Image (cartoon, rainbow, N blue to C red; front, top):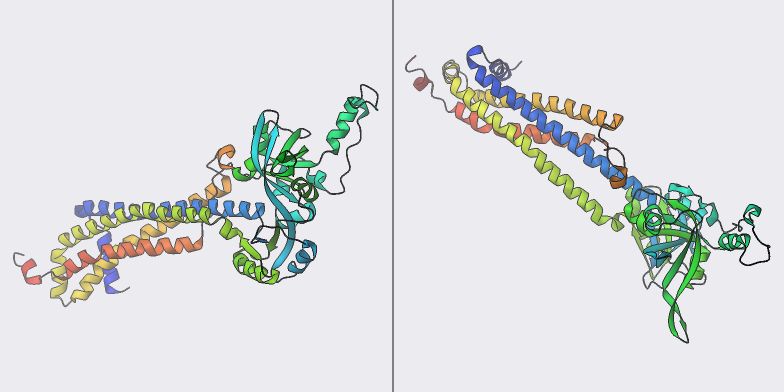
Length: 436
C-alpha cells in the first residue's frame, strides 16, 4: 500500500474525538451513493420508455417509405416494388395508399387517415394488423367472399329487399374496414357495424364538386397502444381505397422493412437513387425526429437535475476535508518535519476524497442496479394503461450510462479535493508546532 493511501485510509477511520468529522464523512458517502443510485434509476426509466416507444413505433410503421415528390401517385408499381425489394438490406416491401377521410356513424364523425394495403404484404413491413383485438384482418383478403345469409335471421321472403337476410347480405357485401380502438369508441362502432367513409377529394358533376363516399363494414378493431394511431387511423383493402379515391391502379407510397433499423437513413438514400428521378424517401428516424429529440432533452434534464445530488455530496466532501485539514494540522506539520514532501501531503487528502467518492459510487451502483432489476423484473411501479399504453414502468439500465455516471461522480469528488489538498500543502511546520 502506498504511503498516501495508507495515511488517507487511517484518517477516514476517525477516532472518538473526531466523531463529528466521521459523521460528515459518512453523510458524504451516502450523498454520493444517493446521487449515483438516483441517476442509474432515472436513466434506466428513461431508457426503458425510449426502448418501449421505439419498439412500438418500429412495429407500427415501416422503416423506410418511398413516395413521389409531386404527390401524383406511383404508376406501374408492381415491377418497381419487385425491383426495389431486391436492394441490399431490404427485407420486404409493400404498396399502400394514405388519404384523409371523414368516417361517420349516425351523428358522430371523425377525421381519419385511411390506409389501403394488401394484408399479406403489410404484415411483412409492420405489426399493426397483429394488434387487432376484436374481429379479424382476414376480411381484408382480396379473396374474401361475402358472408352467407343467416337463415335464423330471415323473417320474410328471401326476395324482399327489406328482409333481414337481404340487409345482412348487403352489409356482408360492403368493403371491410379496420378501425383504431379510440376511433371506434368515439364513433360508438363495433365489429359488424356500418360506417360511412367520405373522401374530401370528391368528383366533378354537373352540379359541381361532390364528395365521394362509400359505406364500409367494420371487420375489426386494433389497439396499437399509440393514441395517434388508435384515434385517427383505419385500414382497408388496396382495391377498395383505389376505388373510393378514384385512383385507378395508382398507389401513393411503397413501404420497406430493412434488416438494420440504424441503417434506415442509408438505405432510404439507396432506394431513392434506385427508384430514379421524381421519387423521395423518408425513414422512421426522420418521421419521429421531434419525439426522440424530446426524449433526448428529457435525458439531459435528468442528468442535470439528479446530478445536483452528486454536487451537494461533493460539497460535503469539501467540508469534511477542510475540517480534516484543520484537525490534522499538527499531524501534517510532524509529517513534513520528518521529510514528507508537499506533493505527498496533497495526495493524502486527494486520495481521501477520492476514496469517499469510490465508496459512495460503488454503493450507489449496487443500489441503483438492484432497484432497476427489481422494478423491471417484478413490475413494481404500476401505471394506468389507458393513459400510458403500458401497465408498468419499464426499467432498462445500460452499461454505457453506468460508465458516464461513475466518471461524473469520481470527477466531481476529485474536484472537491483540490482546495483542501492545496491548503494542506501550504502548512508551515514551524508555525504549527511553535506552541507544542
